Amino acid sequence: MTTPLTIWICDPFHTGSHAAWSLGIARVFESAGHTVVLHTLPGRHWKWRMHGAAATWAPLMRDVDPPDVLITTDMCDVAQLRGLMPRAWTAVKVVTMFHENQLTFPWSPDDPDRENGRDNTYAYVNLSSALASDAVWFNSKHHMEVFMEAGELWMKAMPKPHVPHLLEELRSKSRVMH
Image 1 (tube, rainbow, N blue to C red):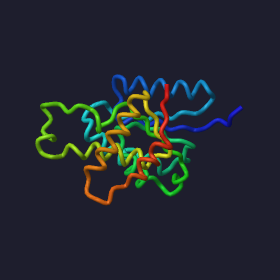
Image 2 (image 1 turned 90 degrees about the vertical axis):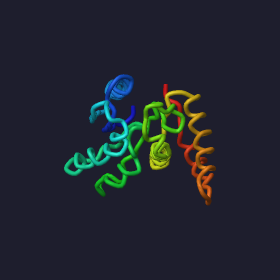
Image 3 (image 1 turned 90 degrees about the horizontal axis):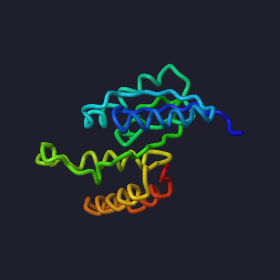
């Protein structure tokens, strides 16, 4: 029998399929005997959620014991979250679930960011979040493969030095979760 874990699930865009996933995975872990603490933010203003979720959750971490694992989604800037965690939380394993990703997600024709040249920001948040995570989960093999391919193309388009070793590191900690 495995030792029961305390798991924080932080869902920054809690609506629709995102909410169904976080509630579903919480039930799976609870039925396996783990303690789950679910933190959610409303499913609106997705760009702000990507930037602001970490700063919203960091104060909640100050006066509680750290969990064994923190699971969040691609809608959270994990690099920022790790930077804001209290020192007592540095050993917490962080998992990012990629429900979708901004490297391959189609842009809305009505989105002004595309015209204003800000369309790389959210792709980079997704890449840096994956790199800052201890494990990266994808909802399908296809999603994982297109993310890796798009990440490689994206990094090659950036100024040198290129860092292909980061993608190898990312591949080694990525899994498909069904």
